[in-house]
Image (cartoon, rainbow, N blue to C red; front, top):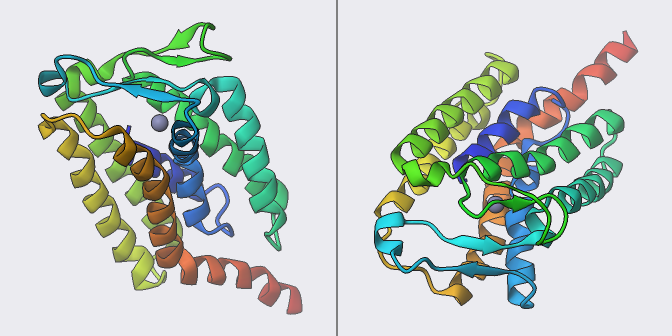
Length: 230
Ligand SMILES: [Zn+2]
């Protein structure tokens, strides 16, 4: 899944408004970032189906980055590290960050064909294979992207900085377009390039949203101090 992960992150940002949404977007893609690392060192693999040109998707062996139990651990670790750096609402930030990381399991479980293991490669797998109905799957992701952007903009409020009110919806539109390109892929990607993409994309998406959300998040941090002085 592509833009759907960012949509969940933006929707979740209203539950922890003082946290910069860039952390949530990176967290939502953390499993893919880890897949890039594990693939680079040879612990996880992508497999190209013989009829890739008509299927447009890969299958994966990725128990460490995309398994449910590992993701609970990764989510806890990521949530702990990032929330410790927050000045306020650390507990809330931890819970939202961890939940967003783990949400990757459910979202990818909707679309993947071979499925995502619960714990270890030989454990039961969640894979509802929506990628076999790719236009439908991409339409669902597009709706999610719209909903995530709208929830974020509403939560940011009418007085939010322009980067939040306009920049985030534009980013989500571009990411939606990028997600749809999967439907037109007929030549399988080069494995070495894939691993680089899996690591780079979450970083780029996270940094872009962090930059766009910076002013808003700072404003959200400022409010309680002003109230405290009163
Ligand atoms: Zn994934």
